[in-house]
Amino acid sequence: MKKITKYGKNDSKFVNKLKKISKNNENNKKPVAIVAIILVIGLVGGGILYGSSSSETINIASKPYTEQYILGYMLKELIEEKN
Image (cartoon, rainbow, N blue to C red; front, side, top):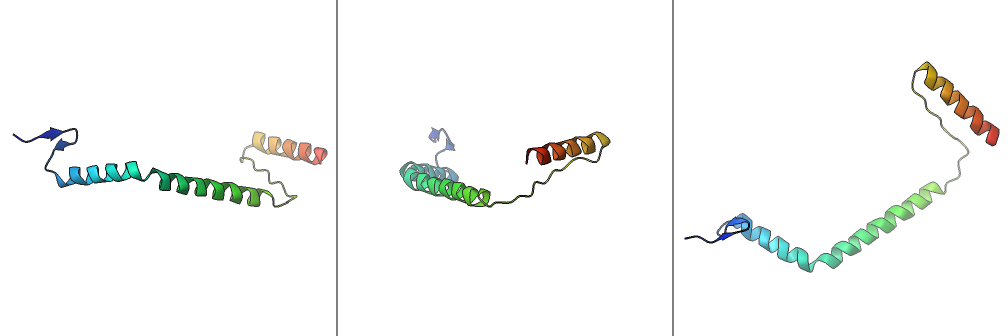
């Protein structure tokens, strides 16, 4: 009688690979966390550098419908009035 595990039959090569991967993942949590932290720092830093560029142009887009053209124009007028 063959032993049945939670993955199915125990003699499968695929099951053995899954077991090795799951054992390795338990020991490799620190490198994954370090990579995640580096990615977050990079994304935040890039966002700050990109967002800090001073540009006085504001683009307003509207859909090609009469009501949307009017709302776009009204928004343009409000922005120009505030600045």
